[in-house]
Image 1: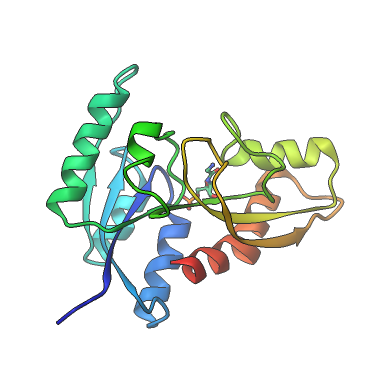
Image 2 (image 1 turned 90 degrees about the vertical axis):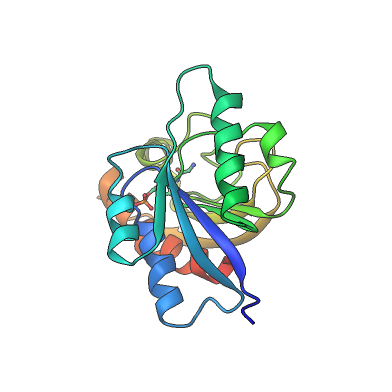
Length: 191
Ligand code: GAR
């Protein structure tokens, strides 16, 4: 009998973190869980191609403005149909409501590309995080894996990894450094 936790990975974009999870799974480094579903809120997310290339079921659920409850009802139905037990947010750019997160206590984790509580919260995502870190002038940044609750980037921290900022870093260069040196290591370790 297969007792592995059934994991859904939520994505919105390129899926670098999804790929790190898939690679770790293939290498046998995700011991207790199995990625069985990828959910994207964007129909053109390259992460969907990564799921397809690796034989993982993928669904697109788009959110229309002001329709959070409808969006989350569809999400919940899809998760239930697929017997999902744990959710990993890997570059998922929608904020989930308290109604949704309260149904998944300590069963949703997120990766954020900074050392929380710096450069995080509503509106601070993707490249913006690295722009803010460079504008502030911090010399060290990194990534954080945390449980998800109703506060954006506010749940209990699981792992953090620091990354040094170089004098000539641009936001794009720093994003890549944080991805390679921290995110792609931390997220599979937490799964
Ligand atoms: C990653 O850097 C991830 O940490 C970040 O978006 C990027 C997605 O890239 N997530 C957030 O900023 C969430 N607040 P990917 O789709 O290539 O993994």
